[in-house]
Amino acid sequence: MGDAWRILECVCSEETARRRLEADVLAGRHPAANRNFELYLEVKRAWEPIIIPHTVIDTDAPLEECIERGVAALTTP
Image (cartoon, rainbow, N blue to C red; front, side, top):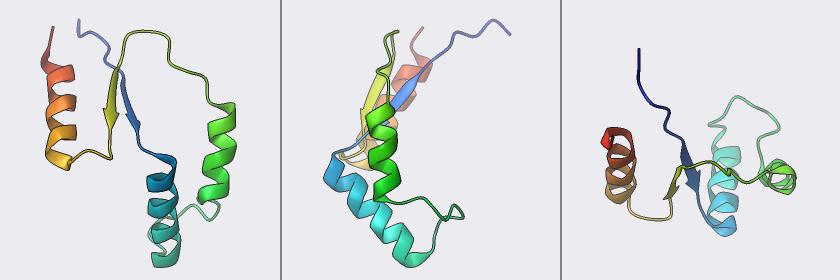
């Protein structure tokens, strides 16, 4: 279709990740039984940085700011 690739990397602080994951576990909001903070830490240890151009969206920022950043990355040639 001729569209360019866009990579949006969503990040947050470790404390935010822990808080979000623990809240989801308590509420039973996710179907994956192993989705918890320990899995987050395991994946984080194995994570390889993205070395090609991409947009980082810090989801600790207000939602509106995250959306604006994502839309800008998707609509900028």
